[in-house]
Image 1 (tube, rainbow, N blue to C red):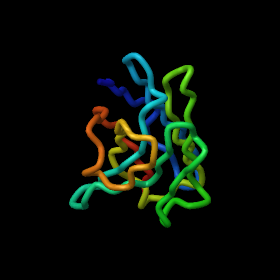
Image 2 (tube, one colour):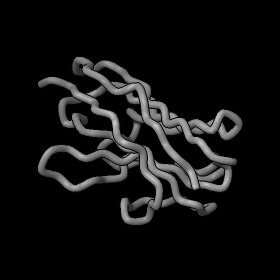
Image 3 (cartoon, rainbow, N blue to C red):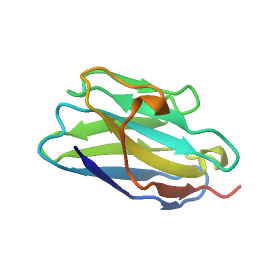
Image 4 (cartoon, rainbow, N blue to C red):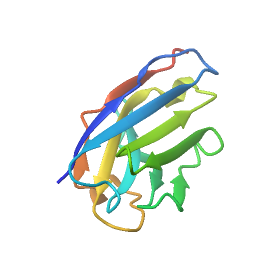
Length: 124
């Protein structure tokens, strides 16, 4: 099993940047695919970025492509989401998620392990 704790959320103006971190506890992170998902009020949870176990493959939702970057440091058991050029529509609770597989997981239903979420707010 793995426990996940997100940090780095907050209030940022349009065009600003934030870096989210997801620290994992447990024996190892290297056998888990990781993802960052978000849920805005009244909307379904969506996967905005995913990464495979080694960091060699990544996925981005069209809405964030070119602005967000997912990365991982398996030695530190940490996954990051660098968010640049933030927009009001990026406002949501952001969740880190893990699934024990070597591929990528692109849907919320594919993840077994979740963090508690961190709020990102970009005022309009």
